[in-house]
Image (cartoon, rainbow over all chains, first blue to last red; front, side):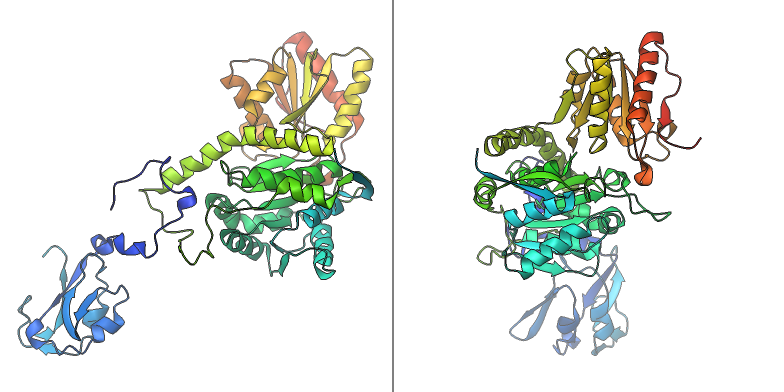
Length: 106
Length: 397
């Protein structure tokens, strides 16, 4: 967040003057579960990108690049819809999907 | 002073007449007794092409105020009207209008809240909304209802305020009572209110803005502080607009109306139409030598604490008449009384103050009630003792 303004400085009625400024609001701190990804077994099918309600899947040139952890709230939809399988996930070591959920603290 | 037309109008038609001359961009309203005559008459003006207003006949008062909020955020000059349960149904959005700093002007024709079902006058509807962040003006007559509505546009839209305004008149007593009302020329009203340039507009597609955004513990508090700052500036704006209006209309409007207070040892404070009955009774009592005066606050929000303290300085006993009850407040007192007590205490004045609840559900208040109050006040002033802090006028005991 930018430096917090006083009541004399902030806009009247809380009107937000800048368009698209919700991107500045780092909602990632709300997360209790964290999605983790296995790049080696990812098919780049983009199912996670389609379903993510927070546009928190970063994609470049048609390929999966990263999670936007500043905005991912950890809802788990990406892990739920992920069709690709990994024998031993590169982060969790567990057999299962390419996107798996781990506790935020881990 | 400009030319004026004298018309025979009841309070509701006087309000509709003011709305016609204000010619707001949008009116969204739902009919409810005793306010119906305002919306009905105004919708006829719309149908007859006498106004340019976009009239939204919505499905409820909640929708009415919601549509007003949207239209005002879009940058329009917006008005509505309601009463009693209609105002209660608006509740949520009444707060949103003031918090979003949208200077909507609303005519409230005071009526008792259900239950039991009652359509007649008391102030429980608007008094319930006293903390909703709206400026509140109370009108004694149809003339005042007309004049206050026109001034309300200027008051609410003032750059320091951007705060919605409720203009009250007493249901049936004023709302349906025909009086002589002096109406300004259309052009004089148009010049007085001017054009409204909103600070921000939802329709500004070149610089899009967000209204009513998420506002957490990091900013909500600051926005509430801004609202109370606007209220603290409102009194000066109300006085300034009143002075300017006097130049146009010849009718003087201040914060409160003080009658016989210069030498008064006893004082009665009362809002709206009952002030007329009170004033005529006080006039007769003064003719008999009683040193009594009457104060009629025109403004309840912001509360005119300084002005009331000034008016009551040196008075030995004060009676505050309330047309509503703040249930569970000290001895079941009314809101006007409680605020008068707070103002006097904060100013270090220990005048004896008593409260009378009157007129609930349209119960008439007569000169003999004011005589009874005056007699009680004389007893308090003579003895220095208060027998009853809160009493009831015209109640079968």
